[in-house]
Length: 281
Image 1 (cartoon, rainbow, N blue to C red):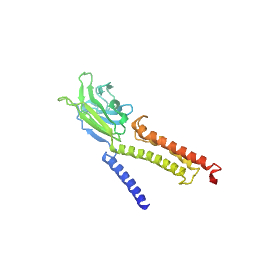
Image 2: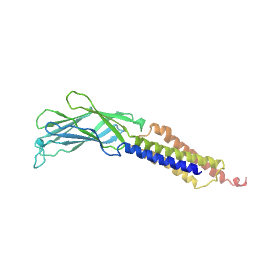
Image 3: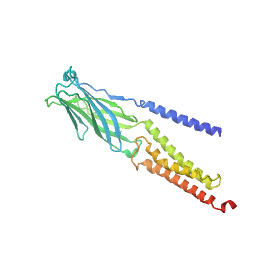
Image 4: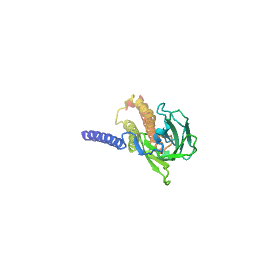
């Protein structure tokens, strides 16, 4: 008994250390720079922060921040001395924003479309782009493509920005992303918890049916509590997938079946133990 207890404690500590190590290995949720951008000839810089991933909808939310160069800003009012236009294009519908003379540029949220298969959660991979950012100044129709600084600010995901070669022009970027190992570890632990409560329910019910353990009426509510715990645990999965993925078919469904069957067996025990003739046997 002592050996089993020690083994359980060692396994729990090992799982805890492994999860923390995986989380630390992915940067502890701190923002990381994927691409070092360069300023335009007038000193304007652009930063693209990858802030949200909506895998079920196939969307990547990017906050694009424009910092105009010194020549474009009034040193007294800090407003623009000329109109400044921004165009963010991800290959589908471009997002266009214009700041008029005297205003102050800020951050523009942009939604990029992603391609990938959310059904392979938590091993799903996606790609967004190509992402191009262009600016225009004043009444000029000349468009300047900007090489932005790109930052990963989304915990639980890992990104890679790949430039496409276009000669001397600043590149368009393809953004590849997948879930971090720490996220997969959390998913595995929650699924293990679900399987564990199903195994416990079956064990208790079978042992009671076989008269290896005494029937306890309050235990009926325990089975109900375990059954109703399935949905909250399923929803606790990081960025929980839509209903119908392989997790539901191979794990969640059978956990529910096992718990319902266990509760039914325990109800059979209740019926049998309350039979007046049972205690006379």
